[in-house]
Image (cartoon, rainbow over all chains, first blue to last red; front, top):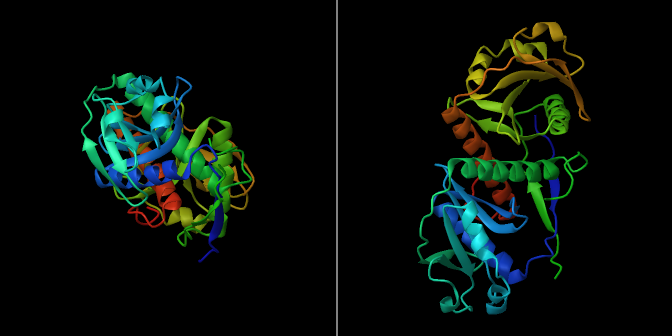
Length: 161
Length: 161
């Protein structure tokens, strides 16, 4: 039987600029081409939110922090925290931001809304097994709960995050 | 800054009856009350699809098979396969289907579109660690990819599954 298509409304994300959203979209497409799927704005145990958390079929976890301007990067003193939650850490930015401002020991992705390229590889720092399991659970449950709140908007699933 | 809300269209699922969709929704709400989030129609390594796969914050995995009629249950000879992919196995059905048709060694949930109750507890058969990791990855990646295909419908994410 054929049921009517459901119209869903994605919550507005007022926290991110249009540039940041474009960089996120292009970066997610690049990561997909490398076998990773992505959850955006994932709250971590530290209380911070990771812009993009990427998970591949082997359980490898990358975090990508999006910086849409020089000021945006300079305002963030706490980005090294993200390393504790991933196997590789990247920044992603737009073509307009000079690559030189980013730290040498992180990866760098340059993106627009349609795609992205790796500019620098990221060093690997493998997660302990327990942290990997905790991150996989956070990732899985955030993605599933967001889908559930879209599919059943009158259900008990609360807001987007 | 405030961006316009995105209108999303959830793919039509022509595989499931209206009763099955109602039972799925009510069951997912019950599972949420017990700390589980849910991915529906998850393809398993065996090639079969699990109607609902539920994951709790500790990594426990339950599978719920939805049977919307006696005929629907009798047509399925392969349901014991699902046990290999979960810690507990349940059937879920509507109020109209007699509970007696379901096997005694599985759990049973009775649901409508608004909620559900456990009618029988399910015995526990703990997954091996490698199978649990594989199931968590399947669950996480399916949920993330479905969200990505909704958020970026012109991206490379393909169909719903």
